[in-house]
Image (cartoon, rainbow, N blue to C red; front, side, top):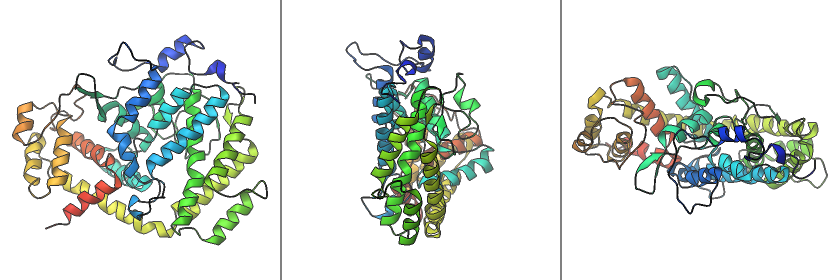
Length: 415
């Protein structure tokens, strides 16, 4: 594959003006500066970079809880950096839009719950029991950037992030858990929140989104092996067996940089407009060997059970404590009363909740909470329905870091 072979289909207006207009469409126009030099996708990148949700990724687990007390274990924010690096290397070589690629990569995991995929599973069970709906991080990531995350504008007013369609699409369509090592963008524009009902249900709308999706898988496999080795989750015999099955040359080490390099080069070499973004059969086979190894030897390892049990306990106890104070339209007052016993949990939750309600400023202040100047969606209305309150609690917990969830859980243990 020659360098720049995808330039004619990259996400630039010159290639397909009508499709590009769909890509850069936002729900609402965002404020403009006369001297701004950024593109629409460049603005999305910096909007995500400046968001609190992005900052919290540094204290969210990739696989192993941040409480493992090892500064060299991968966190969610480091994984995001790996995905950005892998995807932008591929996109640059192929001639795709690297600004769009970076924006999708930067935002793709904003919807992750605390405690990695175990936290996601716990919130999914809660949502199935309480809401008859599913919680999965790709879809929650879209909900977060559309409805939950707020950013202060140049007038000091907090709005929703209001990202472009192409970046929003890249978030919800990035699922890397499926055995899908060849990707082509779909043709149709769809209502992302309504029509995506399962992870990986649709391929991305852009070639750049396809690159991020395959880069996500390339990025996490090798790094998870390194971390599991450092923490003693993997034994030497298991690692030796995987090395024997995956080496293509005698000098290949089984580490993150080697795995990433070999697969990046393979994607660049084998992708074309006819076949899509793809790995060769040889490397597709290797990737699936490594992925299956990680599931069998790391993610389902019995040594992970205490962590999984602890994560489940922490999340359920926080959820129960917050649900216990629900009192319809009087919930803010009930939270204020509970703040006497649990000032951290109830105080921060009350302030969070107040940003998304239709109740008056006077009612917010009388309950002892504060909210800034807002122009966002009041997604929880007036708390008169229990369903909306459950959604508020789930959204709030999903936004927590591992360390903060542990902190408020420890507060619940105090008499």
